[in-house]
Length: 382
Image (cartoon, rainbow, N blue to C red):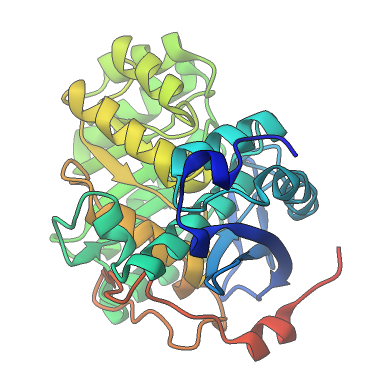
């Protein structure tokens, strides 16, 4: 066994990890969702049951998107099998030891590590009788203001979808996915803007879809007559100089998403003035522990953040809500609203996301429970 043992840590026997189990599930989506790099109609998520010797079960989730990162549901399951070997006998409440053991067990694989990190936080919160947000320093808000996203699709479909989200569902911020042909993207963005009320904010997200020479004229043109809240990841994640060039060229704030996976990435973006805002997604960061480090890096650099999402089911969304509730500089609309994009839930009591707000559960740990019958219904074989 690699990593530090529970006995060495002097932890709570009730939180000693004895097993980390994975269950792949696929719940259909309510709509096709495509970005510049690809899309999924029925993504496979990996649910985690982290079992301790004291009978506490911590829940976790990974929501890999192969077009966004290098991980798949299959790779997540395989990585967690290796991680489990390193963690058996470890105190789930010693989060730094857990992350050290995971780092020693396998390189990379942040989505897999996030699922385990979430499960450890859930187990610790249950043991202490406090919500995960307390473990993260406490809440600064009780509900998370969230926006909804419209994927790349024909303009008429995109407008109809945006109108439903804003008018019928109450979302006060709409993100338009671009990254396709600049002229088509501009037409779609303007058409959606024309259909929205004045108090609905508009964001555009290229998901790395453009070169600098494409991004600057496109977004300069759009910001001349549209009140854009932000422009997200206009160029390749590795093109930090390009991100800075776009940031310097626009009046609209630029948000770094794919350019800022890790705390180290966040430092690079901040220190090189390559963005005005950092997008923190607990999945890409590798869990709540490194996500807090990113938030602190942003705060030290006097940068606001947005708490993003990898379109998680209920467990991952609950974790994202607890995190967003605890970050003072998370002042931009969040994307923590994954369950609204699925036809069903795997939770016993679904998160009631309405009027553009995601509630922060108040029970111990994540404050949510799985409906194991639903989990069985949607379980898939990889």
